[in-house]
Image 1 (cartoon, rainbow, N blue to C red):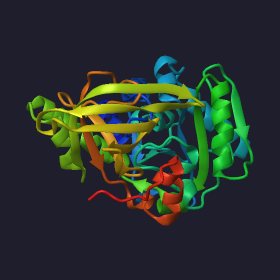
Image 2: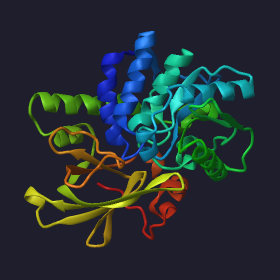
Image 3: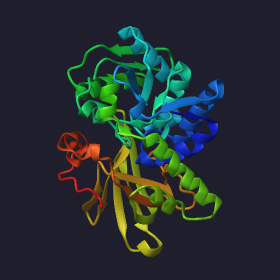
Length: 356
């Protein structure tokens, strides 16, 4: 167990934004929310998954909706904590800890806000090791967790509890519809589980990994080194391309930010052109019309000068970026996981070939 203080938040926000593969919400807005929460209570406790006991009751928390909407429609701040409270009221229990849905952008900071509001620790890990656009894509559910009950809350005080759903895909469909009616963004609490299931299904130590990535980027800035290379020194990935964004198409449909961007190589990569397609998160790199890197491996963009994570809602024409490819967790490479998070789950007629 360790104490997270205000000084830890900036590197976590940077690192989580990088792990978020373009999604998970704006990391700076997440940082501001977490900073305010930590300032109120002084610190938040973070526990390693190995410290979670079998009988402890955990809840998973995060925001749901299009990142574009959450960037323009600022949250009230207590939506996710209210969703957890609604779920506690339905179950008649108090949760012992909160775990992240995903390690991505602003959503990785939400459990810190919830932990501060409810005075419970945050588990160092998450259900994706990155960000994905849909609820059924978390390891807690892929490996046998219950998709219900779940709860949603918005900034107006509305709350919706889903006592039963048929399966995880129906949870996604119903919760997405509720989120759209709530204005395109809502706080979500779900996947209630005991400690044994958490330890078995969580992708461990991703919060501390995000912190190490962010610290490496900040040190690279201070020493005027290559921030993209600093990211790769902490992960096992590689730089796929350094380029300039020359085209982007983005629209919000059915609660998702969908589109693509095109980068032309610069420097040593001059003459190359790639296309990255996204659904909230970056899904595939296409070069010469062929998929080169595909989900669930991580495709993330960072600015070449500062190593800032470039999420899908903020990237613009003319941005210069390093396109990084980072291997996903082994928990996402199993046949049962690939059925849910592999390229075919997103409509790509190709098999998953892990990056080396």
